[in-house]
Length: 178
Length: 249
Image (cartoon, rainbow over all chains, first blue to last red; front, side, top):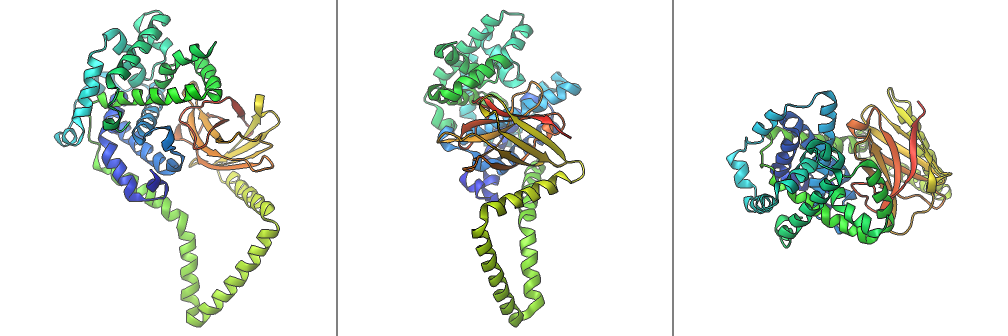
């Protein structure tokens, strides 16, 4: 990130090459539309270029900063699209299966397997609200309405689910680059 | 609410899932609680891990090209005026002319340095005001006034941005910031989470200046706000609002 802040184009290109697949997968999961997801992906890396000197390595790793930024921009775009007319959800789920072999090979599948295994071990009542919050950008109140569950119950399940997820991923931070 | 109540809200905050009132209350608490700020960082790392569960996908190679083209264009626009001026001088005067030009330029620079030393602060302020005015008079530019609220009462700022989102903020009578803190600009659109802008430090007289880029989604109907945050900035506000905007044209 220091090299990017020093206007090193190659450093940005390397960061893009390293994280493009995971970030684009995340944005496709959120937006379900290739054109929109690519547009947001471009915005994210341009923002990284323009604000790299704002990155504080004492506050977290580049992975967390980049993913948090990407998700935030993705949710912002999702809400913008929703105000027009949301992209068809069915199409989104189908599109998200379009993974190239090259992408799969390049991606650190072991790490993905760890997260998916951990998520799979969560009860649906905990996993569901977490996924709605993370990938659909819903608040706890919106999730409660969506699921027809009491708000207090949703809050407890989300908190418990995230605590369990953290416990299951404990010690994996270095290998994830978190 | 007590400290423990806020701590229990942090995992939901890491997922941006708090409702507005709770998020606001927690932000106020985070401004004064290092322990909770640190805990939020840990929860954000856990939340970020969920991104890995999405199916990895390969974007079009054109995205990489577009990004690199864009940053090269930005770099060019930053340096072209200087390169052009240098080339014109050397090619116009030849070697003897070049020496004379060097002497002339050196003398001019020396004179400017003297003037700069004599009136540095005022010169910078005038240059910034001129730049602000130029930006404000471009077609389609918008000017916003930010007024101090609560802890920022008495302070004020003006923010101008053009059609491309290039923005400049000039603030006055800002309270001093604690050590390790800086002012940070935010773009707020509706009930969406505030989008972070850059950070800046006020001078000894409480004046501050910032150049930033207004996000595309914030161009038409954003509220602009300023908080005090850790130096380097944060992705989501942790402190109370010191100034906030209202449109003046």
